[in-house]
Amino acid sequence: MSKRPRTLDAFFAPPPAKKQHIDPTPSEDGNTTTKPPAALPETEEQPPSTHPTYPFPIPHLPPSLTDSLPSAPAASPQILNNPPDLDILYYKPYIPAPTAKTLFHHLRRSLPFYRVKYSIKRGTLETSVTTPRFTTVFGLDSTAVFTPNDDKPVDARTGKPLPAGSYRCRPRPIPSCLASLLTHTERTTGANFNFALVNYYASGNDSIAFHSDSESFLGPNPTIASITLGSPRDFLLKHKPTPSNHPSETKAMKLPLASGDMLLMQGRTQSHWLHSIPKRKGPVGGDGGGRINITFRRALSRAGTENYYRYNVGDGSGGGEEAYKWDDARREMVPWKPSGG
Image (cartoon, rainbow, N blue to C red; front, side, top):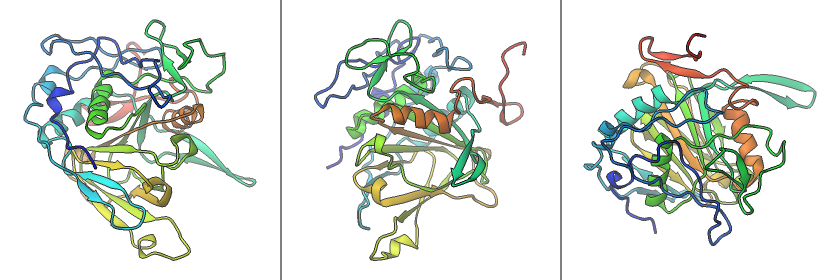
C-alpha cells in the first residue's frame, strides 16, 4: 500500500555547502543508500554545488523557494493498475503549482544541458542520431560512491579507489538543487534512487519515442519517479506486444501531465509497457512551451552509469559534448562559454 505524501517543507532544507555525498555503508540489502542532506539555516546563502565535471557551478535552491513550501498539499495519488501489468501512482499534483513554477525556472537557468549526438548500427548500416530534446544526468550506480575529500568514485564496499578505466565516462555527483528533491521523493515513496536524469523539452517539437526503462542494470521491476515541471504535455502508454493482442497494445492510454505532477512507475510497468512524449502541434502552454522532466531511478551496475552518461551527456561526460545554458535575455538554451571565452 502506498504511503501518503508528506508536506514538502520538511524535506527541502538547504543541503551542505558543496554537494551531496553518499554514505558508503551498505544497507540491509547490500546496496548503498543516499543520506538526506544536512539542514543549514534557510537565511544563510549557500555557495553553489561544484565538481570538476560540471561545466559551471550549479546554484542551490534559493531561500525564497524553500520559504514557500509549508503550504504544500498532501494529496493521495490515483492508482493506475487496471490494464494488465500496469502499476503506476499518478500524483496530481505532487508539488503545488506555485512551488513547481519557481522550481522549473530555477532548474532551467541553473543546470547544464546537452543535445547529444550518437550513432546506431543495424547490420552494416550506421545512422547518426541527434536527441530530440535537451538532456543532462547526474549520479553513480550502487557499486561505487563519491568520496567526500577528492570527489572521485571509489568501491562502495571497500572504499578503495577504482582502477583506471573502470568507467568509460566521468560520473558527476547529484547537485544539491536536485538532491533535495531526490531526498523528498525517497521519503514520500519509500524508494531508493542514485540517478537524476533531466530532460528539457524546449517546444512541442521536442519529444521522446516509445520506449521502456527495462534495462537489466535497473533490475527486474525498477521503481522510477517522473516529475513534470513547466508546460503540460501528454504522456502516452501502450502495452508491449503479446500473443493475445490486448487492445492496449494498439490504442495508447493518454495521461495529461501538468506542472507539479508525478508518475511513480513500479512493478511490471517497465517490463510490459512502453511510454512516450509525442510531438505536439500548436501552442504548448505556459512557460513559453518549455517543460522539464526529472526522473529518479536506481542503477545497480557500472553498465547503467555508462549508458546514462553516453546518451544524456555524451561519450566525453563533462567535456565530450557542448554544454548549453538557459539565457534569460534570449529566452532559449544557448551554447555555454566560460567567462572571457
